[in-house]
Amino acid sequence: MNVKKVTGAVSALALALGATAATADVLFWSTQAKPVEEAQAMREQVLAGAGGIDYQPNDGGPWLTRLNAELQAGSGSIGVLGALHGDFSAMDPADLVDLDGLGASASATFNNLAMLGTDSMQYIPWMQASYIMAASKEALPYLPEGADIDALTYDQLIEWAGNIKTATGEAKFGFPAGPKGLKHRFFQGYLYPSYTDGVVRTFASDSAVTAWEKMRELWAVTNPASTNFSFLQEQLLSGDAWIAFDHTSRLAGAFNERPDDFVAFPAPAGPTGRGFMPVIAGVAIPRTAPDMDAAKALVQHMLKPETQIATLRATNFFPVVDVALPGDLPPAVQAAGNAVAKMSGSADANPGLLPAGLGSLGGEFSQLYTETFERIVLGGQDIRMVLDEHKVRLQAIMNDSGAPCWAPDAASDGPCPVE
Image 1 (cartoon, rainbow, N blue to C red):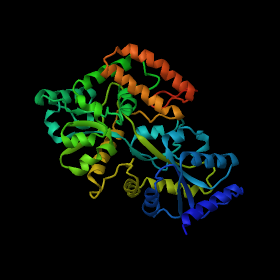
Image 2 (cartoon, rainbow, N blue to C red):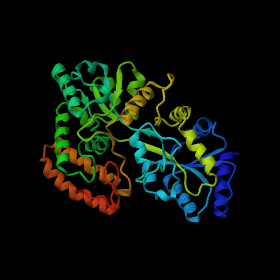
Image 3 (cartoon, one colour):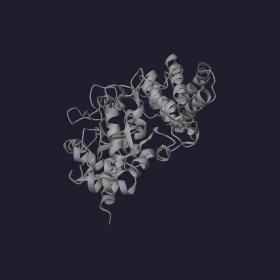
Image 4 (cartoon, rainbow, N blue to C red):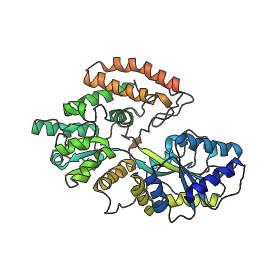
């Protein structure tokens, strides 16, 4: 008999009956690490030394339904919440316990996001994933003079790719512009935050015009076959790309197959910072937690270096604290983990968070950025004309979804405005 399932069932029954007494376990109610093998690794490896923890992962709908029921009842059995930043940002901070003094991530930027607009930590960053840059070591001799690969600017990246094109006669920058490529995330989380310090409010701004001009410059030194590239590990291994941008999981094959041939490094910076799109998961305590001391102890456990490493092994999400990665991790995890840590911990870090609150319009939102790229960069159309036309469509998406702004855009009351 599965003890965890029984415990969860009893907890659910107790809630249904209105019981308020604490159970022996701290109920860890999470939207993360849901696959069976990940959940089992969480229980057996990540939480093994934390005492009696009942780890219960769920889809977002059931997770929110039970949480809201307990909050409305004024009592419940959930001790600790695990969820993405977007889940917490949609909550009333008053429903979460202030966690000042329990720990923090190594990224001041992440810690500021975790305050949810208040003066206190409303959740503690727990783990992260992201998109990074990768390069063949063949490309390194062509770096611009004085350039630091861990602190590149977009101008230096363009110059680097241009140096390679001049020397070899081939454009060797690889971009995921294929049908299944994640190009929209580059524009939403990297280019726009780096040049406009926003993604929705600033969509049609003068700084956005500059951003698309810079994208045209980058495309001029990009392998034109990039319109067929979707998983850049393939092009790194074939030599069609010497420099590439992609999600860590889509670069992993290159590092695992030929770990000595490639390097991973942070995304470049623009005038308004080093834009990057982190997937941030955090842990929080609802105000209705039955045992505050036990819940706080679990939150602190999640930030221990050994717990962060165990979480990485269990989920492939990277640590948020400074920790030396053990040598027995797969090469791709080692390389990407170091790059992600440098990127999120950089002084000019400017995260462009995953879109939140769009509901069924999320696909249309991303398609708008893809079409903007296709018209401006691939089609050579006038930048101002395209942005002004698409601005109207973007505002309609925001109005229809009701989604408020997310970082780095300034907060909004109601739908995020396209200024």
